[in-house]
Amino acid sequence: MAAAAAAVPSAVPVPAAVGRRVVVVGGGLSGLGAAQRLCRPGASFPDVRLLEATHRPGGRVCSRTHCGGVVEMGAHWIHGPSKGNPVFQLASEYGLLGEKEMSEENQLIEVGGHPGLPSVSYSSSGKVVSPDLVTDMANLFYTLLDQTREFLHVAEAPIPSVGQFLKKEIARHAAEWEDDEETKRLRLAILKNFFDLECCVSGTHSMDLVALAPFGEYATLPGLDCTFPAGYEGLTDCVMTSLSKDILLFNKPVKTIHWNGSFQEENLPGQTFPVRVECEDGEQFLADHVIVTVSLGVLKEKQDSLFQPPLPLPKAEAIRKIGFGTNNKIFLEFEEPFWEADCQQIELVWEDTSPLVDVPSDLKDTWFQKLIGFLVLPPFETGHVLCGFIAGQESEFMETLSDEEVLSSLTQVLRRMTGNPQLPAPKSVLRSKWHSAPYTRGSYSYVAVGSTGEDVDLLAEPLPADGPSPQHRCCLLEKPPTARFTPPPTVPCSPAGGKPTGSSACTTRSPSSTSPDSEAPSSPPAPRFGLPLPLHLPRQPPARLPLAFPSDRQILPLARPWLSVGILAG
Image (cartoon, rainbow, N blue to C red; front, side, top):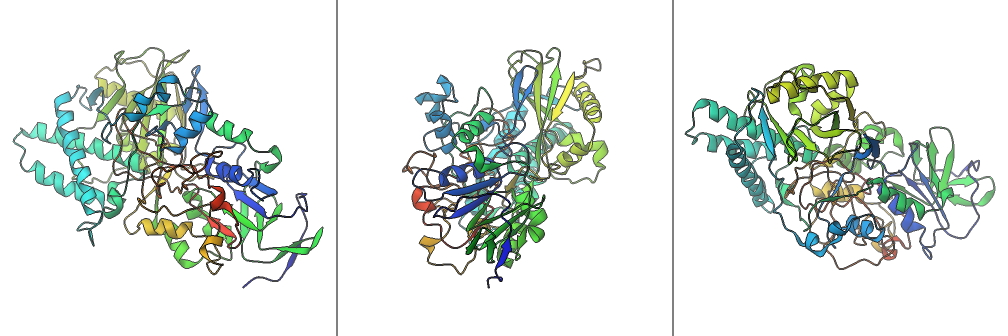
């Protein structure tokens, strides 16, 4: 039922043009992409406003200048950089990639879907772990991970979570090992590191939280992982330049979205609007439609106060059930490298750990054991930088520490691991804090135990649900006709040369169109789950699609429903 008409002062002057008003909430790439589509010539949307809570666009795309170079606090790689990848297409059109990344040869490379092996593995006893042993455990872990795809089409998975399945199979294999007890323990410790790495990939605290049945619903794209030479924010900047400056309003956190009412402006007495978006500073925007692209973490935290009337129970339950976790980066700057010149990735193995044993511990004493290791970044002008990755509750605890505490802890870790008590301390530390950030509240989503891909489709359905026929729904979020899950083209944490075949991440819906200025190509369907803008080691070549660029067919006519929530960004 619509509320009684209420007059609202026109806080923002708007033209009395014939056409529909649309408010986009959230200025990440998904929100920017939606606004870009709405503002295309001939799109029939003369009044579009984009409200971004922070002082900058891009969301979890965040490039920073550090040590005379650029580091990515969030989105890092394009995974699966090939013609079927919309982020790669946009980067290509904007001229943001180098000749090697654009080469046909690079786009055709098939690596197999898993991370590459570390260059060196250090153990907590200060020794270098045998590369053969690491390779052996990697083969076992990823063979078992591939077996999770077998449960994709079964009526009911025999075990709820990916973690439980892996542990059961590892225990079976471990019973057949003929090594001495010390080597057996080392094997399990190496496997624990692979579990922690997969937690980074899936954005979860534990693989026990990730649902087994839908874990195999992922397609991959060919192409060797690549980065943006000048920073990922170059993509954000290019999208921004296509939008009129009066469309974008920064430092505008939204307090409440009134989405099923009847509201009037004083200067337009004969016109009513079903949507009123109220900002925390008191400013209000009336509209015919609202597109909500905030992170799932924000939806989880604020859905009760963010939407009036409250979201229907099935949609609220979908928000609750879909998993959303934290993955952070820690950058350490060194005066001189302690690693070899050809080293690309450093693995840390804690010999007293095992994926088969959950030992309660105090996070302040053990948080750093969840750190999977470091990626060696190319040398910068003024320093040498390692990029570490850490997920889950340990990652969130790390955010509560001071820079000095993090620097001290990791200095001791590296001295212990390398067996060099005189190893010089890092000069500085820089880290992301995605869980603490009030407008992200984490990194990205995953298919949690108790949820399915259907929850994502449900979350993507526009409101009100009693609107006209489907072709008249708000079509910014199109249901892909086939493969529901495809890891998106920008992912966080996977070692160089690998790609995930079954990892989930941020909740992202991408329609079939892949660039703001091109017609929808005949490419593989867009993903339902995918990491929108994240922070990983290079994995090869997950097609994680963080952008939503609807085609004209999808945008028009955008009659009722008035509210589209949640899947334009994870």
